[in-house]
Length: 304
Ligand code: CP
Ligand code: NVA
Image (tube, rainbow, N blue to C red; front, side, top):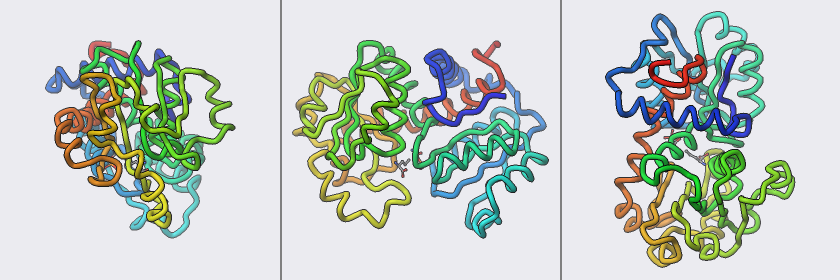
């Protein structure tokens, strides 16, 4: 059985297959195969969501299935029922699970005990669904990632940054992380990554130098709200603004996983200038999420 628990666990071929499927599904939305006919999938969300929840709810229905949304707050999960017990119950009732939570180990434990195809819809460690949609956008707008330079600015130790680093490790494109020292991934992570095409910079303009894609995420990830004031102050030099964009390659695109906080990680001016790309990136979540499910069920093309 296939799961999508992290980008780390994928091969270059897996990633390429899912991205190609996403491109196909977007071009032929009304030909979506009804592979989930008769199935019900559980969406278990212990953190807020707009894009991820809607893309899975719509995507699963387009694939012929139905969904049940369970928020941590109004299920027994919020009252402390262990993950492995929830997993064993749901495993006897539904056909697949999409989970957004804090610890990566909870998603892995759920997959093990439920014996259901399980998707990581964001943990503190990784946001694999986001990066698959982002790579699809790179393929559509830049023809792919080969020979391209991506720069991630801000919280270089967050889930989205780490999924980008694993994507660069698997696919071989150049990735720079521009982040304050205390928000750079630790050496243990870099050692585990074990590649030299991912580089860390304190100086934001050096990180952005010649980048084809300038990417950012919120400075205060879900669960880090108590650190807000310090994070916002420390990360200010890493804001995507017109001055910093001057260091990027001519015609560089700006990407943001959203939600965006104008005046923090990106200025309103830059966000609006690049809104067409940024909201196409959000749109890709739908197609990429459908691609993930098809891939988990063993399909590598709309016909296969
Ligand atoms: N980018 C993303 O995952 O958005 P949501 O938190 O709205 O799902
Ligand atoms: N790093 C962010 C991503 C939101 C989609 C968070 O975890 O809150």
